Image 1 (cartoon, helix red, strand yellow):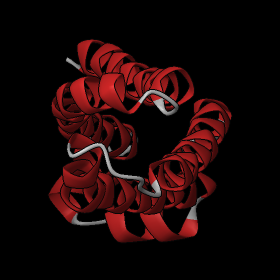
Image 2 (cartoon, rainbow, N blue to C red):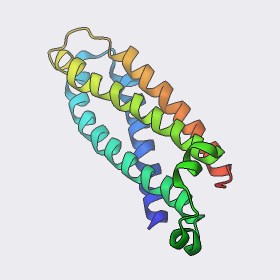
Image 3 (spheres, rainbow, N blue to C red):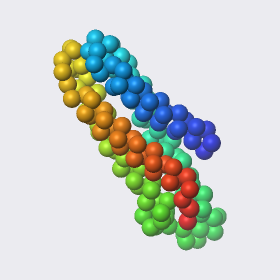
Length: 153
């Protein structure tokens, strides 16, 4: 299950990041095309946001829980909170969750505040907000690389 979850996580994150970058770079100067493409991409981005969030939680906590033994579960010696807040792996997970929250807020701002103006072909701050979202996505990708090399314990 975690293998499939990881594949979905990577596919959704790359589709979301690459799609946002392509929409902004290729279409930002053409308001007519942007007004046509951005609403469609926004739907895809929402699906990717949900997929990446759910699969990220599944994968991250599966790694943390995997180190617990049956004895830990039976005798209560395992402490998930300690693993999350006191290990490098847990702190990296928290960093990715913070990035996810910032990305989700930036995406929500684009979708609910800027998209109506884009559809009406009005000037908006889309490029700035997309740059923020892409920048934080870059940080999240960096954290993901480090996370693959971090020891769980």
